[in-house]
Length: 396
Image (cartoon, rainbow, N blue to C red; front, side):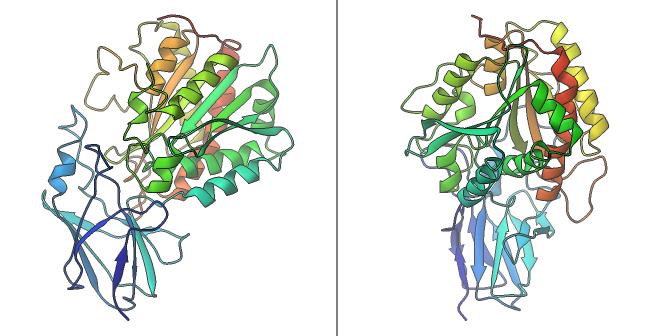
């Protein structure tokens, strides 16, 4: 059989420089079109059963050059980690890789005719649809299309529970950055509990609050296999303060619904390919921040810490203190500023592993992301009594 390498698969991306020598397959990361963001990698290899393969990612220093500020004391995304591998499209495991600062190299011998390599397992459109259909089996869950993406894909909003005058409104979004597929698996775990009629915490949460969930805030980027951008080249998590309807219609649609329905709690789901923890932080530097919100955040964080061994307190804001001036183009900051009685938090899931209870040779996997999603339920339940009711936006 002939060796074939392709990123032209759902959520796939890769540049093949030279695949003539199986022991030295040279690859590179493409950029999101029209942006400085390097796309993640997700590609398949066929025709190599039993053939020892060695892959070399070239010019990784170019992607490292675009990392966030104040990360000098944090190892980069390529250090001490390897790709995730699947030979059946469902079960994933990690293989080791070595970085010399310029290239990133790993080896693998496929057992079958098809194998996939990815930075993190993809969560493609078909899985999104399955997640939504599963939720809608519950008669108390409703789906609304609240807008369209740049390329016309629907922006879905799922509502769990019935709004009422005494019920706080809890909002969750994931995958503004399409490569951060951990958010999809997180929602699978969250839905496991929310849809279980015998789970007491979930049953009480749905009785006492309304949950608004946007499962995929960037369906174009997800479908196209991009890293951080939408189809117009916008980093949606920098567009929230004054979104352009042409450039970021996804943000416009979600913002409008938050403003119309009210918001008391917001969890903005992301992941970080450098940190070795699941990081949560409130929007502490927005202009409308008040110290009492620290008490509400600590209640939430303490409950999550008690529920999930994969969360640990004590991790500082990456790079030290949070920025003195909050970037209101970021979702969690805009929400925290616009809804001054709310609690707005950022969740950054791990990509590599956690420092507490790590899984050697495996790291952070979809199964653990699902577990974190399940464990968020008691944390949400703990914070509900401390929230306002249907908080409305105010000028900041």
